[in-house]
Image (cartoon, rainbow, N blue to C red; front, side):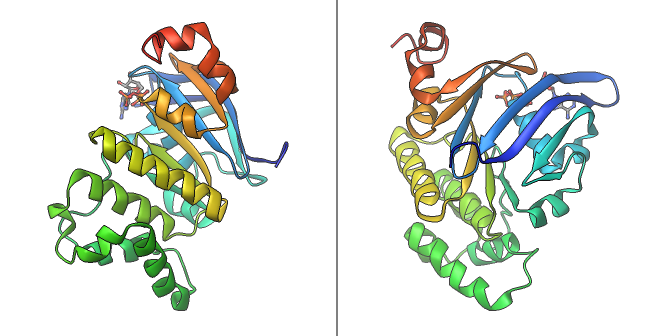
Length: 246
Ligand code: ATP
């Protein structure tokens, strides 16, 4: 796993609406098979970074105006979101964005929209249910699921694309401490069992650094610090600003 870079973001600049500069020369690398955390204050540009990678920036009138993103050896900057999914990247959006007036099963099938191996899709639905047994019991519309169940469905839907890389935007948001623990347990299990690489954006720095191997700290549109999760947990500034002084 040493030095096997799956994703390389090289010095990118991102602009919204042709003039609002949000990312100002951001670089980071994600090693194949790792969980990598991207941390930073509100408004630092974490979600924008994920959207730049997945191509979802376009739907918000955002654009990469400098630098490159390379995934598995290919340049993917400013690619269409469905092309990015086909390349092997799935994003679990902040706020989950599942389709409320579709069933759980329909949402999961939607996650497999780029796949041509129809025969294996049913097996993968069973696999998702084995991770999230509660989802199997919920036969109604996804809009009636609890917040935790919606988060699980969003992760399950991302798995259905059989991605190499999952981009997760604040999976802990709005969940009780118990559910946060459960969701992070599942993220670790996914990574361990299937070797899915994960780039994790989180406000909950303690939780993120407990499951990541490497972390990046973002301020004002660029990376200001990076290191192993152990190094970051021991860093005095990180302790003070991100780990609640503990
Ligand atoms: P949060 O944790 O609050 O989601 P973040 O680190 O993910 O913060 P972003 O959501 O990437 O930050 O936002 C970074 C900056 O870009 C903010 O100043 C925000 O106002 C601006 N921004 C985000 N989306 C747009 C958009 N569609 N158009 C214009 N500006 C935007």
